[in-house]
Amino acid sequence: MKFLKKFKGLIPVLFTLIVIAFFYFTKITALKFYPPTVNFCIFLLFFLSIFSKETIIQKFARMTDGELSPSLVNYTRKLTYVWSIFLFINFSIALATVFLPDKFWILYNGFISYILLGMFFAIEYLIRIFFKRKNNSCDV
Image 1: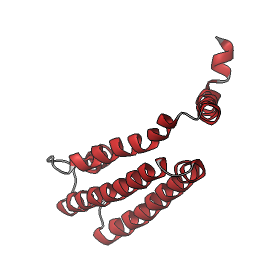
Image 2: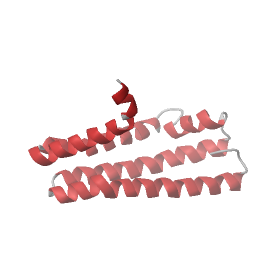
Image 3: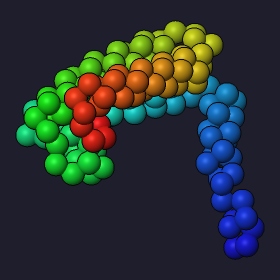
Image 4: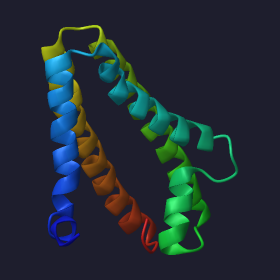
């Protein structure tokens, strides 16, 4: 038990390496559908929240800021649309790579998609800071 406590941070890394090795040595094509499936589920979470009274981004904003101004509610709703579009495009590309050679699947799903996600989040964060300063609201 001490061993697990000492190395518990390595367990996700080890699990990931086992999955990669399993995929590499067995060539099970079904594993290639994992990234598109996860991307689709996240897209659905954002997209379906558009049809509810409060979007998922509004819920996150309320957890950190409390009550939201009308301009912030409008901003978060529009932001949910933008994230939904981005997530759908990411899902579509991930799905397309399933049918391409393994090197393309690995390159996109193991590298490019993470870079795009990080860049999209960073750009959105900068826009959020600009929006916050422009509207003199608390945190976005």
